[in-house]
Length: 405
Image (cartoon, rainbow, N blue to C red; front, side, top):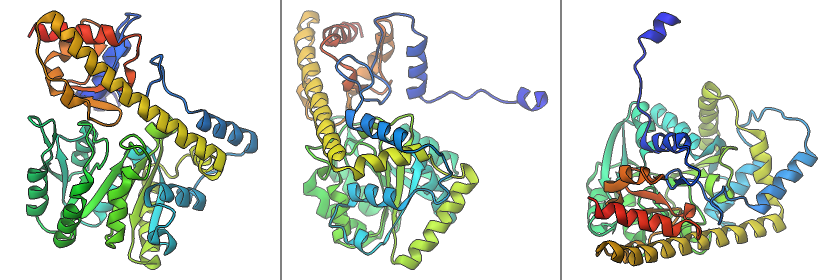
């Protein structure tokens, strides 16, 4: 083993993990972490849903045994998670055309799907640009050709729909494309509903294979349904697709690794074949998902009172993050006068989800560390980590740093 390890080269972790490590090593008691994607409460601590906590308590009281989940989930888990994505009136659900497995978070769902696509001899995957860095890590590590579709425009601070739709129209027929349709990470934008029909028209004509990455359901709009409306419109047009679903953010189940993979199949016979192949993949890598996670989700979503409370809590959290964003950029408008700056911060107030994407801040990411403020080096910040107690300090140090470049 010594000989083998001596030849191992060091690998630089991606900037999200690198920044998280630097924050952890910082001994300053007033340090502020605006880098990693977790929802914080008003005190800057990890947000906890009372509804999820109560579901967890019921699970602990009612179950003692911890068996394997060799079926890669349960029927309850499949139906309940499908309902959040496809809706209670889904024909796909009614016709039992959706193959669902429980996964180790949304990342695990993407990983399993990538392995499945390898089995189907898919060679190239398209992601929107700029991409979520872990999409890049996973796609390249599995040996796919990675290609980019124009998406976010740094001048508009928004999606450039002309370029995006043109690329979607001109890539080869049958291309596999990963899409984040709400709270796009890292750019904090939603695909607008007025473009849904054109997207669907292109996908139908080109026969593209769409992989929806849904990690922020409940944060992009005022309700859960709006964040997945494009998916439901795909179903209306009888399009087959897959969904990688995460519950880390909207249930605060980060360490429980709660996720699901849904693949729309032609019929129940095809669904059985797909399921067996997915189980084969899972068996090779981690054998089975986590039963405690399964039970928490099922308890929460099966219990009508708990579910309604969760939806209410999620809406309140989403609104608080929106309020944080507006407060933060209003403070920047105020503090920049102190340093004779004149930036337009209004354009960022319309962003959605956990993050705000401010490319300008990429220029001062290193400078901010000297003030014990940690952001991602592309300018992405976690606005839920901004509180009434630290917003003035953050805004002041950002404007100070901008004045020094």
